[in-house]
Length: 406
Image (cartoon, rainbow, N blue to C red):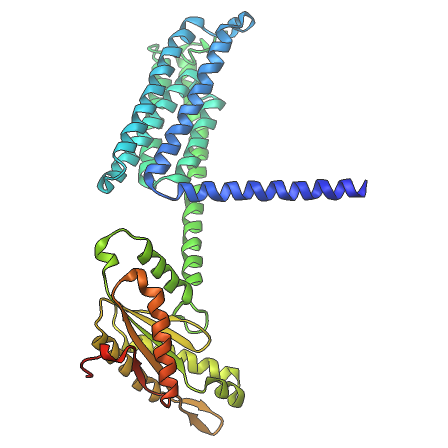
């Protein structure tokens, strides 16, 4: 019995893990582009209409259900559903063929949601403008839209759906349209004044709740987006020095090696790798708090003496790396020398004295971004050569790259 319980628990954990994996893959899929999200939204509404169509056919084929529905309207609605499904399918094809036109992405998103909103508004009219089903459709589609699409496109579609639903509801009170024409129910056919009061009362009661829930979800989405951006930023920063960590360098290399743009592939990047001299002795003699302050001051000095477009990251314990996009080896050497001299001029107060320290630098260049990772190893060789030459110096590897030292 105990063994069976353990197996069941293990199976449940495995199932939940698989479900979580599928959910993560779905999220990654939907993050790809506006086109993917539009196709997903249209596929969802196409599937729902397919379910509606199947249910209508079941009702028509089941005589026991005929007392609840208007069969003539139901038969007409089948053709309407087929027309709507064709519209969704054609919209999907249009969005797919225009997926590479990035300037049209916002227009396609707006178009997609308007098509969905009009289709859902028709379903709301068929069920009854102020019915529970219509309210649920409106709320659930708004939630899905708020998660997947931009605020402007969603609110435009919500406005379109509400205008159509309000218009059909009040057309019923004026006698131009039947209310919930799908059903046969004597209570539906009441006098116009009573109908006007009923619909107005329901709208006045439900509209603030709907809008309040929508704005609350909007606020929640905004806050979650802010937190996501904050966590993404923190995951890219070294917590001690507040410069980038080595993962950002790997992202840069992966992006550079995976791109197909020849201008990016053939772009040269110079690399500076630096390591603090005798840093272990600083920690051993003065404590890790002083060592941390040294790293903080060094990172600040590096930020102050590199170019605006350069990428600075803490590469290891006391090791930093600087990527200089489209910089010559001469430029990289001058930047390295500025940084080396700035570090040598720093002073950190310790008990009764001021602590000074130095760093060694290795410099090289990568003429193709696809070889950037390999060239970092070359810069590492230059750094170790600087250590062997007595530290507190800058070495270019191979040395013949540096034709002019300024």
